[in-house]
Length: 244
Image (cartoon, rainbow, N blue to C red):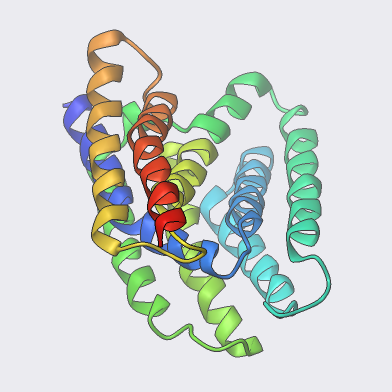
């Protein structure tokens, strides 16, 4: 049962996160997903500290982060990655300070970083799938570099990221967003969608079964499998780009 729900959770993410990751790479805002993920994680930490709904806190804080990040145009001369990286550092520090005030703080930190993938429930799968589909639909309406369009894009990203953190942790979310999309990157732009999704799905299968049969941490195993499956594709795309 654990293997089945773990595998399904990864396959759901593999069909959603890389599509968002392609847009992130296209806009050169790689740190935004990590920053949003960390803001959401800080919200979960506040929920734990106040014995209230971590999901509500995560959603509320993430919405504030979206409105803040959307104020920075994609074409801004201000270094976007530096701003978002700085916000990630602040959110991470705030989350750690909050968690250290709780009993069993190390366990809470580990859960936020790596999630509880083995304990993913059918309800978690339903939430991941439902919000993932909604996220991809909203993504189609995020085109121009206007404030409203940036809010829509970051909202689509957050809808997928926030519940995924609760289920699988920050590390796997970040890896699933970027590694498949980066693997198919060619000639300064996104590669084909099918190649991106193929890397994500094969990496998920290899990672989950490796974790099961080699007794490895599932989230870390999947991230490493995504890298190992995507690296040959990445190298091949670089060589093809040089020949063009």
